[in-house]
Length: 140
Image 1: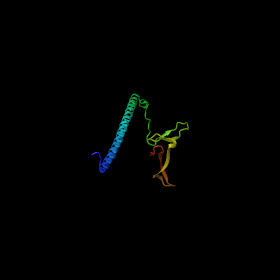
Image 2 (image 1 turned 135 degrees about the horizontal axis):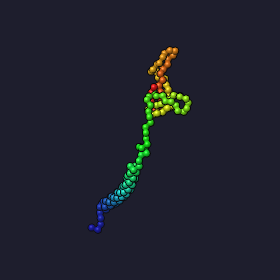
Image 3 (image 1 turned 45 degrees about the horizontal axis):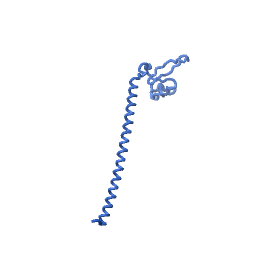
Image 4 (image 1 turned 90 degrees about the vertical axis):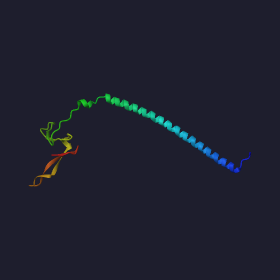
């Protein structure tokens, strides 16, 4: 019984190689599990820190009053195309005011309204329309 048959010895060598491979895979997967656990711990810590920052920022926003809540008054709006008097002392020049956004002066462009003809003689004269370059509103 002291002598091992060569066929069995070859089988034993193959099995020993398989056992060694399995042990190396076990060590590899144990290292992955350890790395995963470390990453979970690190991310949980970062998550808790971010939650605390969010909570403190939310509390700070709740305790800080909005300055615009107390002092905001909406601007007065004029009806469409209402002429307004210039306050620059130029002696009553008329400017147009956008009824939507309140723009005036160079921001209001005047164009011919080709859909509304005022007269055909001596040549076609069209009504005027105003276009706000700031908000794009067209008005008369």
